Image 1 (cartoon, rainbow, N blue to C red):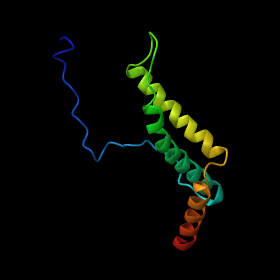
Image 2: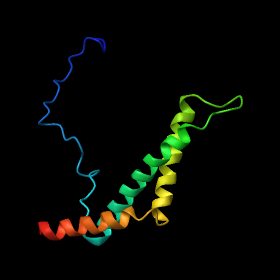
Image 3: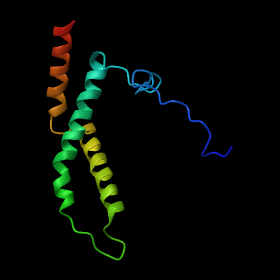
Length: 109
């Protein structure tokens, strides 16, 4: 028998498939450290979304400018700028988000 005619195993039903394996799943944010981390991540995404239009308006030049690779790199660069700004203190959004997360944790417990 060749590889094309070999019997294929049946496709597992959706109930049997573990979408996120437990070894790779992130634990839920707990306590002040988790709340701070989540708040900084939120601010980083927010800042990156605010910076994206600025960087998308910059024109590429030179013989190697432009193309899909530059678009991908530019998005990654803006994401990293957002993370750096949030870690450096950002705009204060993380502080407000952290207070709200902690307040909601107190209410739910």
